[in-house]
Image 1 (cartoon, rainbow, N blue to C red):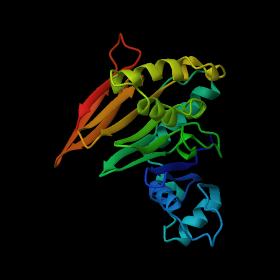
Image 2: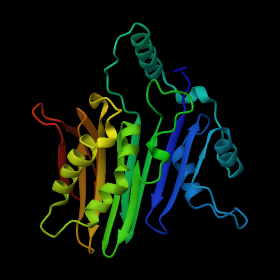
Image 3: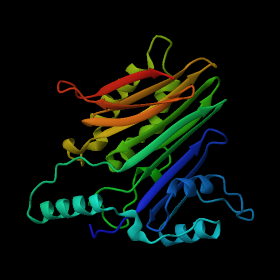
Image 4: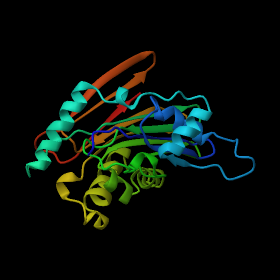
Length: 267
């Protein structure tokens, strides 16, 4: 709300179910790397290592481990400032600011038998100072897990408060791991989206028009093919994936007659 930038990120690996989250930071150029460092930190002298760090304490922790601190103004570009002013003016004049602008990026990977996921966000355009979003909440904004011969990585963007209430990524992964052999992963995701997000009773305090989410699932089963599943109820969702040595970019667009779009790609 005050024009400052506060970033957050989360990282998870199926190797040991390691998780690291960092939030409310304004002086780190790449919070994702700091989140990964938290996940793998082993310098706590026998104490339980923290999973999530926020605010000035998180920045000091990162600086102590070699992450350079930057001028906070570097994180806000000209276009971002213009959009913030537009949104603030809309609120001050009692107009509803309807433009959808989710400033979140995510990545998923499976290497050998290890799945990894990462989600990072600059927050909402009119974020309340100090607000912590879904990237830092274990199980909500990202998930990476291996069970038997199946590896799953999930990352999502959208309404953070709703994503947290749904325990979205962990719950979706659980549903994928326990599906029967006749169920396609894409159909499992569609059903989960409808029943356990859009129509979840825990969403009663959130305006239905704000229940937006979009994300990626990377699935590898029994050393067979990799399946990337893209899902969203936002107007568009840009994404890219690697197939062999080729990087493929795409823009998934929600058809006018659809409430949810789920697309599957073989990588």
